[in-house]
Image (cartoon, rainbow, N blue to C red):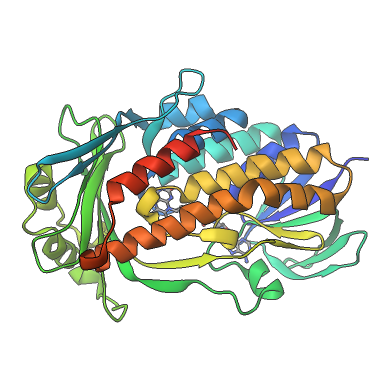
Length: 374
Ligand SMILES: Cc1cc2nc3c(=O)[nH]c(=O)nc-3n(C[C@H](O)[C@H](O)[C@H](O)COP(=O)(O)OP(=O)(O)OC[C@H]3O[C@@H](n4cnc5c(N)ncnc54)[C@H](O)[C@@H]3O)c2cc1C
């Protein structure tokens, strides 16, 4: 019998799981709270496992075409001296391993596929309540409608309302750092993500940039922000520039171009890594709702899309929902936990360099691990 699934949240994980389920013959629909379906105008860095998972959903080529492939990640000292070079791991069907792309470009790739497949997406709608009846989950929506489903997927991000219903005590915690982001023109010939380890400006953290398109790149600075301060919007460019003072190399020129406070995206880092299982009965969390990490390994999007691919496989190949969700957890939990706990540890090392291990070793080991199929 055809299974029926409702996905709460039309972000990266929600759209990916809808595509995967639809392709496996499951009857799937999506509700998305934001009536305009907008995403931040920021860049995201992704790696081999993200490209492979999108390829499995039939949109790998489109994502690569929408972004800018590059050679991998380099670690530099604050003044720009090369410390280590980690080339991209494992090319999938000739697709590149390391890719930078804008969040709107990725959104366009996923929404175009959802539209092409005819998957219903209701915008400006969320759930009002849901009740697991054992043989089905009954959902009431904020537009007054209701439905009965074999499975409800909470793909509603870091501040998940679905998680709040089932795990009211779980919430994202501030990790001590904030991330500053800004897009600038890309110098010709830049073909790596470059990360400057440490800072010589009184701030604790790191900075770097990633190519996004042939002509643009985005700068990021991950910095300890004691007390989780709020910044007045008009000061954001000045605050970001302060955090980029003293760096050499390409960063010195890039930092000078951070001038428009309206174009700075600042976010305190808040993580929430749920224990196994991420499901109760017929309701399951995926993506940030289940395991939001800090951006230190650039894996948030990849983990959401991998969750989606694996959940779609397990739901469509097993009759029993409970068995499918257990199989999903068996394939996903350790991998997502590795990313989450290692990302938080890298942030701790940046804030406490006196007790730090080797971030290059950790990054290289995890890049290799994640390049292997799930
Ligand atoms: C500024 C920024 C930069 C980032 N950079 C990177 C990067 O470089 N590389 C990387 O891999 N990751 C990056 N991430 C993380 C990455 O974006 C997330 O890990 C990823 O989006 C998780 O996907 P998701 O589907 O779980 O959540 P989201 O993509 O956040 O999607 C959640 C969706 O659910 C909707 N929603 C929320 N609540 C409800 C509700 N109650 N009802 C209905 N809909 C709801 C939201 O509107 C949203 O559309 C970044 C995140 C941010 C904020």
